[in-house]
Picture 1: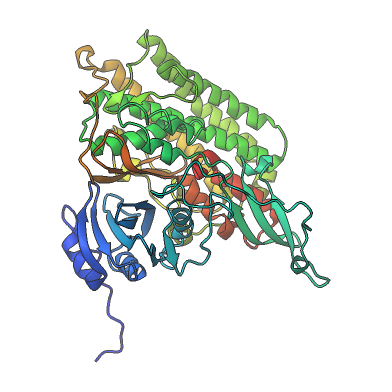
Picture 2: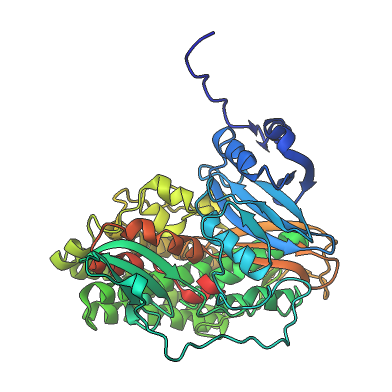
Amino acid sequence: MSTQKPEPEPPATAEDGVDYDRLEELLGDAAVGRESHLNAEGFVVRADAVQDALSTLRDEAGFDHLSCVSAQEYQDRYESIYHLKKYDDPTQEVSVVVPTARDDPVSQSAEPVFRTADWHEREAYDLVGVEYEGHPDLRRILLPETWQGHPLSRDYNQEKPQIVTLEEHANPIEDHQTGDDADTMFLNIGPHHPATHGVLHIETVLDGEQVADVNPDVGYLHRCEEQMAQNGTYRYQIMPYPDRWDYGPGGLLNEWAYARAAEDLADIEVPEYAQVIRTMGAELSRIACHLLAVGTFALDIYGDFTAIFMYAMRDRENVQNILEDLTGQRMMFNYLRLGGVVWDIPEPRDEFFAKTREFVNEIPESLEEYHDLITSNEIFQVRCVDTGHLDPETAKDYGVTGPVARGSGIDYDLRRDDPYGYYDELDWDVVTEDGCDNYSRVLVRMREVEESARIVEQCIDLLEEWPEDDRQVQANVPRTVKPEADTEVYRAVEGAKGELGIYIRADGTDTPGRFKIRSPCFHNLSVLSEMAQGELVADLIASLGSLDVILGEVDR
């Protein structure tokens, strides 16, 4: 018998995708059933075998990206679904479905396998009521600890008053928090502070000026977006909500995430012409979001209302003027529809195209100004180079995507790797930087603005030459969309912050049975503690700004 360790078996794939039969063999006794979802096969796994199943799929089959965790309650059970992908090929997907009894909703935690499951399982516990055995910190994440009940459970009483105790005369510095020989200091950053980019509370432990521990405390902007979507009809009432998740304004990107999931669910084919319009509008939204990110990040670094911020706002206003011409709104667009877009390019078309082309043609010159003012600045470099370090393996473990992941050298972009819209017909490049620091993340966003401008210009060329009798902006969609009961789908797009995904389970009516938003900001923010530990408190502010989080999307 050889003492050498056997070589790991190659990832389980087939010529046309994932070899699910092979995965079933790998899972062995841990899998007790199999389901078919529209995006991937799902394996029903015992509640006490979650870690074994996920470890097998990660280590032996290559599924290294836990993109989302969805939890829901049925009449006879609770259920958690772990949506797995591969960073190298996100079209290869598999779901791990973990049912638990209604009277004892306890399953094994996935956190030891994927760190990103930490926040996801806390949210599932908070809102649905599933408990995860072995979780390192299973407490509420969006609601106060004193909250009674779980808002997305079937028996939750929405009319029951909630009482939060107020300790009027409590000493804010308890005995166990101070001492003569104490080496650390507890510091609250936010939630009402401009550096937190919204109502975010960061519980920070300092050892002198060095960060010893960081705990982002979210939930101050929780707006029940998922529950409101579950109460809305597919065809008309859900689409206005996505604009409000990332109000950066990433509205068209958000709308596309819902549209892609719902169109797969209802088997709706989008006309090619409408796909080009969607692609153009989405990239204009991406430019606006990145300009806002760069401008506000400069404010964080310099601590002053500088010309850099004003330059970024100037160019962002130009984008919003174009988006207003296209959609009729400056931020809350509500422009996409299931099957297409609400209307065609505004008349006169030539003026709209000329205005948009003029803007994208000026982008290279504007970016040169930004590089002169920002990336070439010594203060900026000192604050950003080699701070906020995030290595690729840690980023993957936390499910990080978007510019944050690409700034750590992870070559992952759903526009190319899981094509939708018109992206696979256009000439553009995925931008990556391997510095793994705050500086690299800024460079990625600035270079992506240039790539987005290339995409917009190509879309204009196509739309200008499109035959007039073939300009179909919407497919023929039924007035009432009612997908078959228990049909499930998870679909995602490349949002400005990363992978923005939607999980929907249909219940046979014209409203979803379950609607789950996979927020890239939620994942990206969860890795802040890894980036900040051991660095100076000033670097913590820079690292937070480099993540470009929108709290409306984090809390949903």
